[in-house]
Amino acid sequence: MEALSVTMRGRCQHCQAMLPINRVDTKVLCSVCGTSTEITGRVWQRLLREPLYRGPRLLPGEVQRVQDMSLSLEFSRSELVCRACRAPLAPSPRSSGHAPLSCGSCGAQHACRRWPSSIPIAGLDLGAILLGEDAEAADEAAELDAAPPACAQCNAALDEGALVAGCERCGAVPHGKRPSRPSRPPAPVTWLVASERLAPISAHTAVVQEGLFDWREAPRVAPLDDGGFVLLALARGELTAARRIVDDVHERVAVALEPDLRVRWLRRDRVSGPAGRQALGLSCEGERVVLYAGEGHEVLDAATGASLEKHATSSAMVAALHGREARALGLHVRVDRGRIAVVQGDSAALPGAVLSRRGVKAVRRLPGGGLGVLSRHRGVRLDVVDPRGALRTFLINPRDGSLDGLAFSVSARGLVAVLYHRRVWVARPGEEELRPCLDGSADRVWRDSVLLAADDGVWLFESGSGARRYAPDGALLFDAEIYPRPKRRGPGQLAREPAQKRVDRARRHRLARTSKGEHELPEAARGEAARRAKWPLRALAWLLGRTALLALGLGLGTGT
Image (cartoon, rainbow, N blue to C red):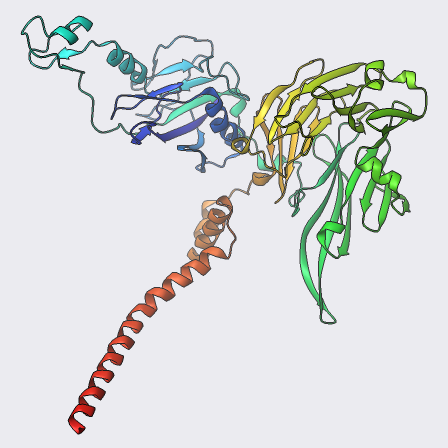
């Protein structure tokens, strides 16, 4: 059983003192002011989402950190060993009590318990074990809360009546005191989370090609009928000077990926001009993939990526791109004055509730040939019709009633995902109600995020090569920013590497972690060094100038 070593700190909500979080609980006692700081299950979910994903991929000795408001968490891979003698520990996964775990070598006691069921964490199994927590934290809080106030003169216990009338033993004024508390907060304790899901994952087993998720703006995405998807993006461009004319040159990339992220086919085209005209849209129609651009649209084979035909983009194709027309269930449907109109095919293939829907705003073909209808009448509704004609209706009530920024996606197996106001709701196959999955920027949902529903969860794509996959319960399954992992470096390679190269590599890693440009730190450092070097020179120039003026004044006075 592998483990994740965790050291967690925070700030007290009342006195802002440093608060070591040495125990997994919803309330943490502050030893300075004696109040409790609440840490909800949602906060624990956000803090542990990335450590549970990154932990198995960390190199030995690698330490990473996550931040959430005033809480910080450092984590690394660890083995289940005794803190005193480093002997292996073997906790029983079936033990459900709070009995301490004894080391078989030195006899040291270690607090051991199962992960509390009151704090469920997505991606962490119910058999996870907590080892090395501060077991006295909860007992101390209960003791301090249960202890009655005492008289300040004779130290006798006071009840509620004595606090008003005075002490019955010595008759002193009603002034009580609480048991003494330590004035300084305790040091943070490193505790372990042990689970079978934390087994190390080798970086060499990754199927993701390096540089695959590389784009400047958020890509266009379309699902395929077999569970894969197609991405259309603009790679990072460059400036070329030809005949004294500087143009933006971009690389338009269209790539089809399998459900396991293996590349099915890849197309790269170098185009020039403003970025907004290069990639207008993308849609999938069964065995065909349609790429829309400023010069027209191109039809590709969904299996091989071969170009089938090219045409000038017509108004009908633009209407299909924006959800005004769709071909699904063997029908050609169109949005006509807020109603669904069947242009071609038998309308009996559609349920009557969908045909009678008012205020229809968009119709889209779903993977496998189903139909998705987004309407606004007595609330925002999403109707999902599968290829067999079964209907599932979801009620969405935006706060302002607007459909701007609302996006939905349905996987080939029926997983429904909705993105609105930087929140993601998910409904598994067979469910009739949307459940919250991700919420706001704390869960890394941004305004430019692009949603895609997969069979095992939801994808989120955004600008800056961001690509992540989440399970329906919110667990992180894939993150392109830290994947694939760097190669392991042996002691001999580190010894032969120059010191300056190691410093530069550490600086680049630090800048990448803080999302700053690589040129910012050297420029700021040079500016600070220049200011420090010029200060004595400026002082000397000021002094010489004042001396020269004084000498000139004395000379003029003597001459007169």
